[in-house]
Length: 302
Image (cartoon, rainbow, N blue to C red):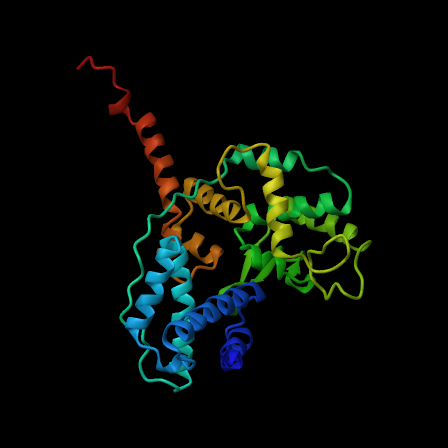
């Protein structure tokens, strides 16, 4: 099978869509797996000739392998993206997945950290040393700005303006947004910049967050760092950078922030994406309402 037939698509993802290397790797794995199934099952090498019944049989094959509907939907999304590219480049007229509908999934509730858990995590981080100050800044930025893991890793020194207290981040689709930094966070930034000077080298490439070897931080190290700090102080099932992002949004909404403002801070393109965070804020609002409303507290001597 000529795998180089996919090279223009991968170049499109990298150069035009500016997807991360991690995302492109996932697309490659999904697309090559799909192509191998089509080749082995139908003896067909050119994916431009694929029809929907063949796609449906591939989905059945994935179900029989025991993959969850969520995993299958993610893989199918990769294939749909490839056919959208073929349409955009006028190599095909109609995508074989044009009328495909995603498999039903049950949405698992993302439980945010409590404010106390975040404070406890920060308190257990040592006050000195490059890795300690870096890790403290990571936790503070995730919680105080709601940025994504990929956005944090991509921050460069030039993106941090301490004079105005603004942080520039590049989100999905290379969309840039500015997020205000809390006064306490700018202090941690200043402390980290001093520590960073001791590890910076010619391979640092101007990135803010570095490993102890002076190179750009990577996904798994960021995840392990957050997980390690929260593992000992939280019993929640998931302890990841995304849960800190979730906590940021939920706590803002709990304090009365307007959902449109939270949407802009999170870098969501639609309000629907932000509304998933309202579940916990509504639960908090319901609790406050029931505890505070005089009719609920009336002891029944009318």
